[in-house]
Length: 431
Image (cartoon, rainbow, N blue to C red; front, side, top):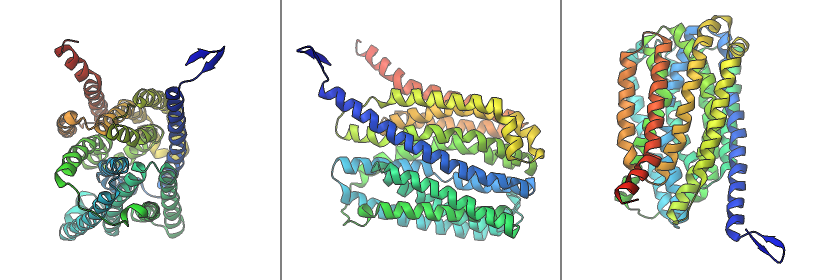
């Protein structure tokens, strides 16, 4: 900004930065609205817990956790990165081949999982305490759709088509709630019926993603560099896969080590606490393809600071709100059987999500810039977290303390690789 002839003149660079930030906040704001709306609709499904036994609600929670255990975050980020890079470097035809190959590959993986479930059906039903075998087969279809959803959401994200990315999320929640409510309230269904709602919601969401990205995957495909692709995909899958393990592992371990009722109480607190991520994930979602695009074109980006401040304020504010209002929310949303245990674990769960939210933003920044040195550390930390959950699970609070400690360690690792490694390199190079 400069003064000329008594007037203030704004440089083109500052105007450009301002327009970029305005677009970022507009896109992030829409995704927050969509995430909150879609998330509330999906959360509303859990209100049906009042119409089914606690043990059945625990079954529903573990079936959902199985679907969540699909590496949807890594898959989405891989295709967000590849799409953003392809569009920045005019390699759309190579991208078309990648999308088709991944689509067929995940279909083949789904068929293999179905074969394994058919062979070990009795053992799986016993381990998960399923009362209706149909729940297993519906969950397998949910798993297949859970592979396809991040694939096409990743392409939408890489295109920066956040409008339809948001609507896909909303319609996913509409389908899930509408169908599950119909089956439970009118047909008397339990966990398996609720999973039918999850399945049909995914069908709608995947359909939107397929239709809105058709211009890319229907185009004439060209061969692509396998080595270059694998050098990017491998670290992205491992890095984001390790982070996703922090999101989902605790629920599956609780289901394995605790009674069906305790698992149901834990799922209720986890559902409310993970709602914090509906607010903060959109910031990283919008940031990621923009940084990939900037790196591909050797441009500078200063979005990380904005994203971190927004994430910290939203996550901490949400955790404080759940700490104060959590018992009231649980009484409103769940039956009286849930209140004492769920209200006790909710503050622990909510505050454990704060460092995880900040770490997620930093991981997005690092991997968008292809700074993959952090990946082996993320994987080792995830393995250590899994071992710790096996060793320390004498109570639900102990599980959450373990989650909180490892989320803090995860945040510390991300901070070091974001700023500490750079500072050390500068010192070694003489400042």
